[in-house]
Figure (cartoon, rainbow, N blue to C red):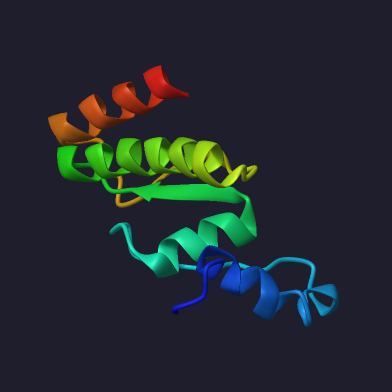
Length: 106
């Protein structure tokens, strides 16, 4: 953790075994942590699950901005694949509002 290139720890660890897999899926919390940063830098592709509430929508936007910041700071190539709506209940007005917001950012 005290390493200068600590944001590349996953790249160092997984490079030894990644050839054995077609896909590596890393599930991390949406909070801004070193674990999440490592996952984003290693994976380079981010799929963001979003519940149908405003807090999840704001968190998704923060994740997109975090990937842009990491790209600038670390010269990384992180791209958001897209949002993944989860727990959809179309009977709720909030679902419609969040889906409309996702359509706008897509």
